[in-house]
Image (cartoon, rainbow, N blue to C red; front, side, top):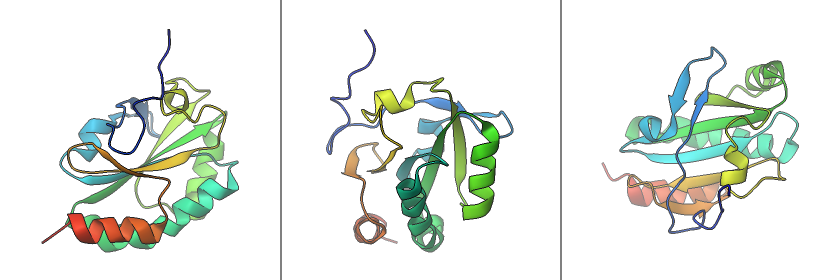
Amino acid sequence: MGFTSNEIKVGGKFIDFTAPDLQGVQHTLSKEIQGKVALIDLWASWCGPCRRTSISMIPVYEAYKDRGFVIVGVARERKADDMRNAVAKDKYPWLNLLELNDAGKIWEQYGVGNGGGCTYLVDKEGKILAIHPTAEEVKVWLEKLLVD
């Protein structure tokens, strides 16, 4: 049957998955983002717009990571080295996982099967607040949600 992407909408829940990092260690999304406001960043080394979006999030991440904001990136690649080089070049400071040859069908589950990727902002309960928000929009959400 496969998955439908109907759940992936503002107000819906994120879809959990497990994928390896570049060291081969498996990470489960729900464990990484539990109790935090999170940006799920589906990207690819070959997707210029994805990488520009990810780079734009670095200052937001640095400003809010100690207040309960986390980013988990997942790179959709044919070769792990492509991801390794992109992460080294763009200097993403957050956890990045590898989706090699669509092993986990993550893009399909998120309804972006043909695309380079997308970002999803989710609240502490795992509800999707925004799809493909700008860094500015993420900041506005974080100011609302992360009250000290």
